[in-house]
Amino acid sequence: VIPPPVIHIESYSEDSISFSLKMTTNIKVSGYVVNIYWTFDTHRQEKRTLVIEGEKSIQKVANLTAHTPYEISAWAKTELGDSPLSFVHVVTSGTRPAAPSLKAKAINQTAVECSWTGPRNVVYGIFYATSFLELYRSPHNTSTSSHNITVLVQRDEQYLFLV
Image (cartoon, rainbow, N blue to C red; front, top):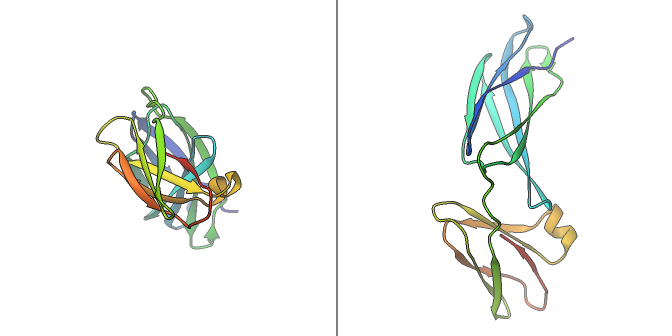
C-alpha cells in the first residue's frame, strides 16, 4: 500500500506559504502533484496546480492574499502508481484587503468600462457572466494591475461583474 505524502507547513506570511513534502516509505517517488485551493468572494473557488519533480521537496508559493484560508492537497507519483491524497489547511497572516468598490458602465452594445478603488501594486481579477450560476462555475475573466479595464461582451445580454 502506498501511503499519502506528508505535507508540513514550514512557514507562512501575508503573501506566501512554504511547505515541505516527503514520503514515509521506501517506494521510489518520481514527483508530486500539489493543488492549492482558495475561495474568491464566496462565489468562486480558485486553484493553482504545481507539478514537482523529485523525492523530497520544499516549495514556496507566493502572490497570495493576506488573512485568507488555503487548502493544500498533494499526491505522490511513485514507481507503483499514485498515492492517496493528503491535505493541510493554513490561513495566511496579516489583514485581508478591503473589497474593491466596483463601478461598471456600458460604453456601447459590446463594451463595458469597469473601474474600482483599491490598493496599488496588486493584481486584480475581473470576473463576469450572464448569470450567478455561470459566475460561480465558469465566468469569463481577465486580470490587470490597473484600476480600470474595458471588457468586451456579447450584445443583448445582461452581465454580472466581480473584481
